[in-house]
Length: 188
Length: 204
Image 1 (tube, rainbow over the protein chains, first blue to last red):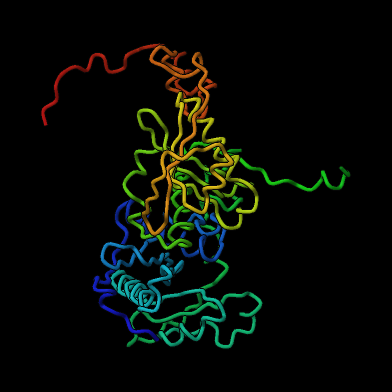
Image 2 (tube, rainbow over the protein chains, first blue to last red):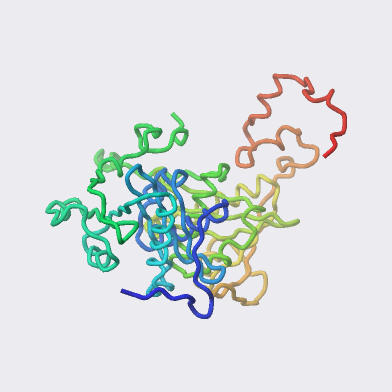
């Protein structure tokens, strides 16, 4: 586990919630750099219609936006997703810092549980950060290529016994039309 | 050509002026992917303060944002900048038709010259496209070496917009100067001068 640094290259490492268009723009730029630029994810999958119903957290080294995460809010849990750190700033615990900001944010909103979907190869990393599989020994995880993991917002309180149904989480929000795109984005 | 070959679906390429906030956002995402993601450009160098004084063009492949370019307008020339193509679309030969579309766009606006800073590795391509070096200066910014290039465009004197062009033609969307725009349709409503009676000064 990498330790979270207070500063990188003499510049302070900070986080902030996106409050203005420019802030959101920075979060989108970091994600586009990592997911579209590095991982070749198509634009329409990366910007999936949930960005304007979510909370964005950005990490800075000095003035430079270097990391971002998106949090979606569900009735029984908060879901951090789209966690991204610009390549040359990795290995400094920026991702951990962003997730900690998600946790405290969830705490202030009275939320008990955090829920993430991770790649099978990354499960060990998340376990070291205090997360556990939603379904112990989930045999289907390999086939589905994602593993649902959860963690208590307050580590001293046990997790409520609530299942976060993946199918609901992944389905587009009800105001979206059948194409899965936000209404108004399709011309016919 | 056999029937089978012609039945292979060709990707549909469309180019337009980025005219909505979504389209602008797509341009910014493409540039972030290529410059920040691939070329390690710092955020504040990529988004340098000129994005909201510029014209942005976007190219789609089968509806997916694939390429974008930023144009800025100076007195005697248009400056082409921030041209990117996403990695997965780079083998399709999009750059030259996109540049030609942009030149045609500038030409229709009445610009007789385009100007750009080309990364050193792209100089042969620019020269094949009829671009000439402004001078022999080589300069660098954001970790790349550049040279300044220009190309003259043939302006049809009767065609280029001037102050004497039909005012409503000048109001058209800039990538559709040859087609009636939404304001021409509004002409039918006449001039009721809705707030003509509202002349009092308001105090703050």
